Image (cartoon, rainbow, N blue to C red; front, top):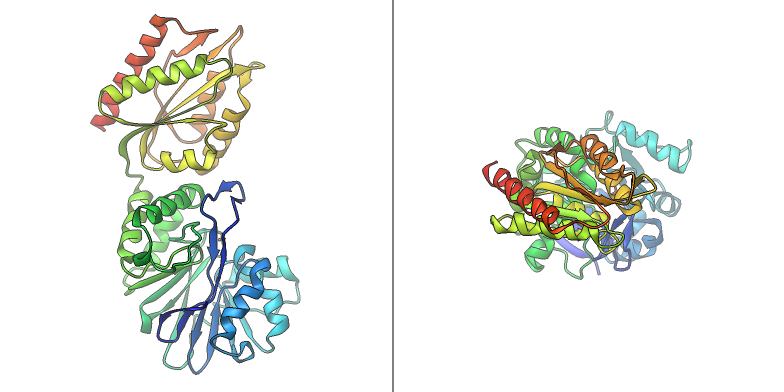
Length: 392
Ligand code: FEO
């Protein structure tokens, strides 16, 4: 069923209940691909859906208009979860004018063919549909270089594509219809796994959108912000600034339980001072869930056994993932265990530094099995780190 958002504006997207892996990010609650139909004297479709869901989108459009009456197709972003139905749509709907950012025109042609006819927003920065107008603004790198927003001033409606999204499948479409805690958790996870390394671009996008009156935000994934769009705008401001809570995340894996003993000792020291601590054992937790907890944490502690003179494979994978996402304003430390030569702790520290984490020196790398004295050393390290977290 299509959903009316405003007079003449409809959600006509698709719900993907089953997706659990979105290019490496585990989507426990599925997602949606949001497409929007704006109906006036002229009609525009803003974004499409993943190719597989094309019939679902068209069914919703047909509830409102004959697709042949659509005049414009706006591509806010080239990634195939939004552009994947463009070719099918243009084969079916004759005479529709496709509009994209300058880099979007290049990207769409690379994906779908050099002969694709596309109008650049450089030549048409606004389109009048009658009473409503569509205004376009590039927001490079939120999420790709081609990304742009569509804004309808008459409706105070912002359609910013990937920005402000969440991977959350639901039969409800609006923020005032779903559990706020779940919604914000998914928005946070989405920001941490997709947007976090692009914070400077988000800042630039905020400047580009400054002064716009916004009373509804329709992102390209998940729930539409209608009841309280300010909530997600404020959360993004916090995340972009790298604001943190007095929280530590301990992430580790273990071969024979030794690194796990150190993790638990660190937990004891940190928690005894009142710091919130989250523990993730890799193999049980997925990288994308760990990163979500790290977003608002002040400290990240990584534990690894040495395997073949280097990092334990699950820890290597996590560190590579975190290095790409570059969490902002974090302190961190490494701990572990080894049999004879060691090597993993040093390798993990290099990766942490490359991720932009301010390392706190530790001597928490123990041979075979940590003794009671060594575990006490880890507890004390946790206590000292907690003091530093609480004073920052
Ligand atoms: Fe939802 Fe960057 O695509």
